[in-house]
Length: 477
Image (cartoon, rainbow, N blue to C red):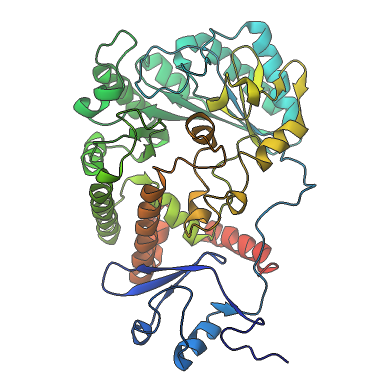
């Protein structure tokens, strides 16, 4: 039998990354099993890089005991070549085909997705298409976010009422996700959202002096006062179902956005890296990275201290996303469900991989009246939207199973190589993922229930979810 020692063909090191724990210690993040090990202090000198380059008997024993050196083959996270695309259960609909703002980094104008409102006939066809595609699924979710959906509020109301009735008749659960700039939100609009199964995302990039730099109204005037008014109405009507999305641009301090988000009293806040080409003054640049790292660490510290004191911190993504994916464990191989369980429908009824592709004719997948080309949908998922292990710029990145490879629309619109993420985003992703892993480690070693408190989790339900995932994955490990 071959010797299972270091360097022999019968054993290998797991794919892993060494990280500092922020307190003088070191961690080993096992990508393959989404597991985190605390490196014993005695091995600090012997394990200075991964994979180890020299042997140490005690270190070798520890690596073997923890399964970081294994005889098992490396697991594959890629779907088989003959796998069909997933069932479509999430449909994004562009009702207005228009927007009342003039954001400097808008991706919709250049790709001609603003074509005017959806006709009633096309709306009927879209509802038929959605329920045909989601037939038999436990839940169907409608998304509204291209342009400004509240422009066509009465049409949105009619669609919602009809969709709820159809879901009830089919025995399906239904949900609605809507992204708005909030400038047209009134108490009537907010009450409607609150009275139906809507989750609302409000696009606001920070306090007025930051927000108005890139997000003016279409006429060039400042938008912040109108956005802030609408956001306040929504928070009053349905606060826990409101998320604020802030696009993070060059020249912005994340700490300033964090302080502003806290001042709003919001529960959910997402910082989204701007999609932009390198000629835009919004495009992320390397010189801002040190400030970003400093601010991300300070935010993680504050979240930790708030939880330790029994408080309820802001649900801040992507830090919270990283903690959650370490808890379950929940590795991902794609950034999102684009062209899989999720598709976008333009105002004229054309179907695309997602709402950010509307107007890109090379990516048109069909029409709600005539159906969708599943072969084309799957080709897109195996090319531009391939798993991270099949994307050349991602396949060797240690953070890929938490990042997922970045937004595919950003790749399509802004990168020459359509398999490349926005490379300006990558160091930012890695920095915040590393900080999220450190935060997870601090929470679990201080008191594991703090991880549950971070998400207001029901421990029994979470345990069932984690056990199901682990049992599913153990077959390949």
